Length: 319
Ligand SMILES: NC(=O)c1ccc[n+]([C@@H]2O[C@H](COP(=O)([O-])OP(=O)(O)OC[C@H]3O[C@@H](n4cnc5c(N)ncnc54)[C@H](O)[C@@H]3O)[C@@H](O)[C@H]2O)c1
Image 1 (tube, rainbow, N blue to C red):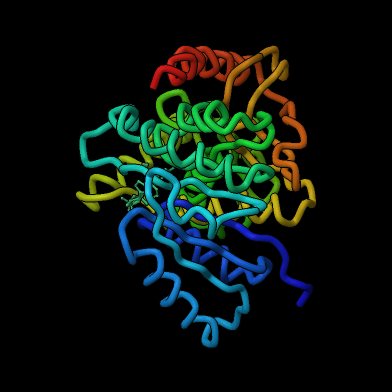
Image 2 (image 1 turned 135 degrees about the vertical axis):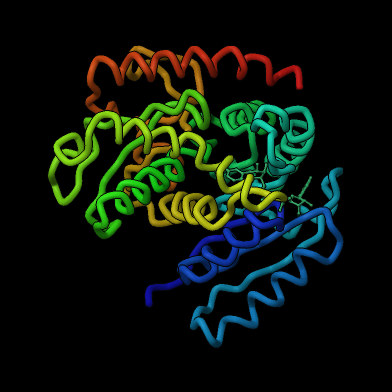
């Protein structure tokens, strides 16, 4: 086992945050995982529990739990983090859209981001709080960090959901399926069928356009489907897997390419917006946005998604 390095903080010890901290600790590549929340004792209790799983799961990474206040109390424990994952905020209830959360979560995310900027000025920040594109844009504004050091998690999750549905439909291993979704998290998610393969064969050879459309619709509503079943709270196993992989990609600094919500500045002819695109990830955050080859209609979908999120992101500075 190589030396464990780096400090990663997960803000918010709810379902998303606690499962993310667990995955990050179990990777056994970080020196320290810090988990925080404003509910007194919750992060300390979860950290103690996670640390006690170390002999069984066989990892040495230490987990530190720390109660914080909105004013910044307790943030000393997060100081000097290399990576911060922001999961603080309310999740959806059945019937709610992600946009219904915007005002409450903007208040929470702004204060978290300001505290992160003070205590971990060199961190790469991975945002997951919803509505995702807007909270990512707000975090960049509130931290004042360079755009490439602030990114959001959506595309990894949407792509994983799409892959799962394709594998289930064709009764093949998930490892043989490769799919891609770009654009925004929600209505303007852009599936990229031209980049979807099963054991190297184009998905379009294996499923009718109609069946692919059905799977795309189910993917687009993937979060709402889980929310409706749970009745309270939203998905966290697949979301935390996605965010943890992004944090690990920053730690590993190997240039992993993954779909993330990144600042687009000229790529695809789009500028000045946080949008779901493929990006190369390293220690500095987004090394570069990858200009994935797209068909004309996929490109048109991405342009449409960019315009849809642009206006909403422009408004976040007033939140
Ligand atoms: N991007 C995605 O793909 C995706 C997927 C699923 C959920 N989400 C979002 O992730 C967020 C968290 O979801 P969850 O299921 O963990 O919700 P949850 O209610 O289980 O946990 C949220 C936690 O945030 C804490 N919190 C609130 N204000 C805080 C602050 N100022 N500082 C620190 N912690 C604070 C709460 O006390 C709570 O423990 C929600 O906004 C949800 O919509 C995003």
